[in-house]
Image 1: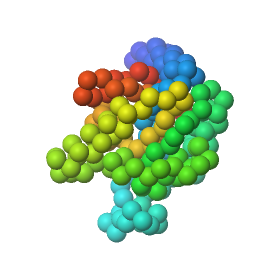
Image 2: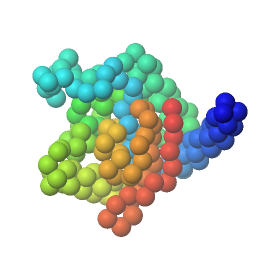
Image 3: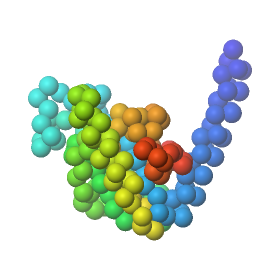
Image 4: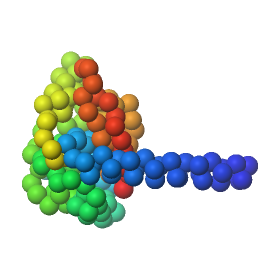
Length: 182
């Protein structure tokens, strides 16, 4: 049993590394949109007294999350074409990931916030994100810092904290081109 698990791990780890290298190759070329899940956090859900204007009432980046965000920025600097624009959810964990990684003030973009529970509001949010991605035609990269649920709804992928999913418009939705794990 242990040998089977080890063999499986030896197959999966190189595949993930290859996917990350392919993702970097795309980002080196530029002209791509990246959905970046915020870096590691201190908890799992926001407290009952949550206020989007007050970071003290939210789940925030952990010490490891801050380190991860710095690593994301350093690797983008070293391995990718320039980042033209950084948009972010208005949640502090997303804003702080963006600020730390890209050393600039991100553009708050409300549709990147956690998805609404109302079906029509959720659909409008996802449409706004897809429209923003579809409108991009630059030669550098654009990064959109958001949350697990948003990326899953847009791509069907469940990224790790701090993972980048590179996308392009396809029909009414998005096509995943690659991923980068930090």
